[in-house]
Length: 345
Image 1 (tube, rainbow, N blue to C red):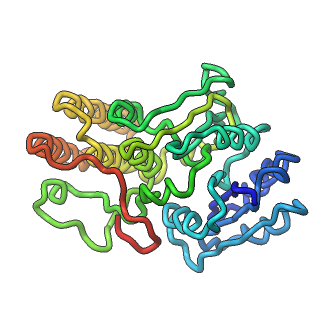
Image 2: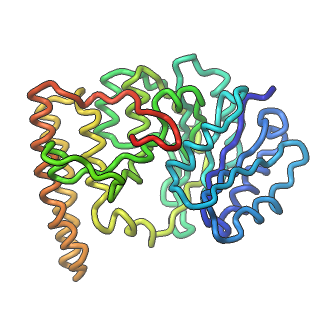
Image 3: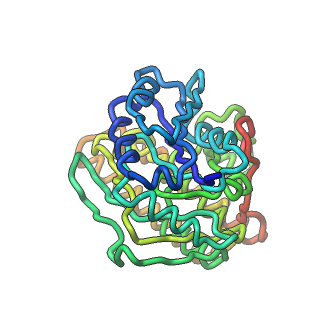
């Protein structure tokens, strides 16, 4: 049996899904040779996403499998559920989000690297073309298409990835199914802690008012490296990562939730950092918040400026919590969380 499956998570993706599926079909004979099936894991779409997938996917020998949720459950739970439903003979899953497109050679490159991967390799990660509003703004890794690097699972890699941010994205990756399950996959029910919860003065609300929703890839990467699993990185651009400028400043970015999530993920992995590095990390993110506040004031975006002011107690509590934990040598080394569709993580 072929041990590779393609996963396309979707939610109300009718405007972009056809281009995504056609880019996968364009991989040609590699689909026949390498892929067992493609799964559309639809998260309760209300538009024509599922019907569009069925009418677009035309490969005669690689079947389209549909996994459908009755109600929207969120991207993290959707992806975890898809991994949990993979049959036992599938070793690798290639994730392609329904608003991105595969570049020529996507399948060939990732499948080749899967075959070369040592047993400790949890994922193959490629570079990408970054497209905003239809314009290519980043053509990928400047070290060239032939560049290959093994990032080992050790403290140095965790420390480097804390400061570098998420250089690994599941939408450009081949992921070993067993590794995903062992580290727990996406943090689907992790509450975004408030100032009192950070300091242990109050328990996190259940269900959480806000959850981690944009830094999950980074948290997965850090858990993989912290648990001793390595990542095989190739400089070859494998997907076209497509974004609209309107979405860049929306959602969590509008109320600076991305910065709050950044601090929380750092605290989950801070044991590899010194006290000086913890202070430096908070300082860098504080300066980002200050710049956002200043920009919002200059543009008259008073609501966004107000959100920045409201974030200050979170930053102070995060630094206090981090320094107390460091002094006690307590916590900050997360290697795995429970895996399952209904588990709080």
